[in-house]
Image (cartoon, rainbow, N blue to C red; front, side, top):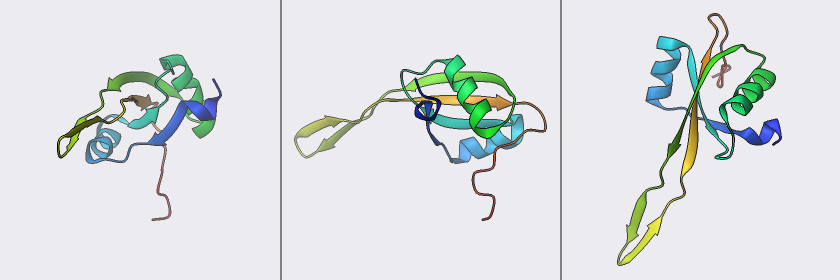
Length: 95
């Protein structure tokens, strides 16, 4: 798998922001087929940082209704990447 295909997007939420300040962790939405080693390599090469730990979890899709019809949103995979002390990834530097 190509390294640019592993990481889909960063997750910018309140929980992600608090984790960034508390434990120097960053959240990413990743490809569901990617494993922890591939996520570690992709983050280290793309952002030039040292990764200490990677935790992954599968997020189930939600059931949604529109009137009588039921639908299912697709599931996805989330990765919590803990960085070495002193390293950081800034997504909105100029804002």
